[in-house]
Length: 225
Ligand SMILES: Cc1cc2nc3c(=O)[nH]c(=O)nc-3n(C[C@H](O)[C@H](O)[C@H](O)COP(=O)(O)O)c2cc1C
Image 1 (cartoon, rainbow, N blue to C red):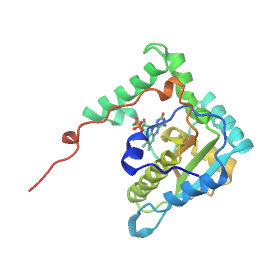
Image 2: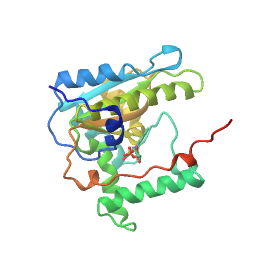
Image 3: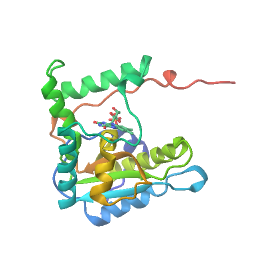
Image 4: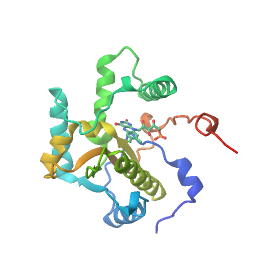
């Protein structure tokens, strides 16, 4: 019997999980999470998300392939991403987030090789038994469909939390979009925005012991009367 937590508690309990137990998620629990995520709103109810959920031997194969890409510096993102695009408070928040992760992992700022090892954990899905890859059709400049994907992604993450699971959204997986399409036989017209590794959190792992702070609402909300 699943104990579904109160919405308020679920919202506060959700956080990015970066270490998982190998235990697979039972099919009926996964289906319940996907039924929840399907309730997400979208522009004109287009529901543009296409989820590819990868487990077992296919998961291991996919991880091997993208690690091999990373070994030779081969990346094929559908959408650009550069930390240097951030500015002002956004780059400061991104910097503190990175610093908090590496500090939790016991990696020093100047330890370049250790940082790379910690970052590459993204490509082995942080040990999660499952990874969901979120693909989308391309409409216009893609901004509105990407918004819909975010709505879906957060609904999925909250439902994982409500079911005692955890997940980590990962832009980094999208850097290997061509390889992922090839391994999973996905049509090139579908673009990859991000992935979510998920499963049961390893609560004892250092990566899961810190929580990143959020800005006060005064930094994000402007009231008009
Ligand atoms: C779309 C998206 C992509 C993300 N990509 C990554 C990623 O590639 N690797 C990673 O470790 N964290 C990634 N994150 C997690 C963020 O760092 C995290 O959400 C943020 O620091 C806030 O922490 P919280 O999720 O614990 O509230 C991503 C988050 C989102 C929403």
